[in-house]
Picture (cartoon, rainbow, N blue to C red):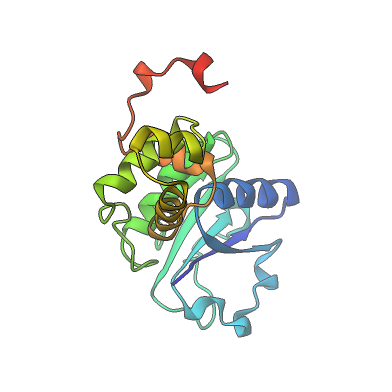
Length: 198
């Protein structure tokens, strides 16, 4: 099942920026909304496991971050302008607008890894040795032909492995695959010469 994300924030810049970061890392359906009253529960978005990013200022004291008709498989992430404060009931995760894209990735991955939002909760555990080899080389900036030459396989096989990686990890972009490889220690960044990546 494709991951579902709702971004609820009054700033279009924040909504679009966060959506762009998430699209770079995750294969997810992302819905953007400017205000809580714009949440269309009849659309069925809350019938599926979903992460909801909510602006701290959109909450009133005592709000429990609930939506009409929602199911129990909703993970709420609060968005803070600056420093992160105490979280209200019903919320385990938060991000600050000062977070880097990799910090946002870490937080969202924790949400998905809780097992509520994807049957691939432990994404990456099912990668084959050859898929990991291909992932390492993709993350280091090698082309399909270069990967094929280094691993002594055909370009078609490389493309097939890359397709499998995208499906298993839910990550479409090369930058997302690179961050995944670094975070999961598939490549050692201390041994990479930045000049080689240019």
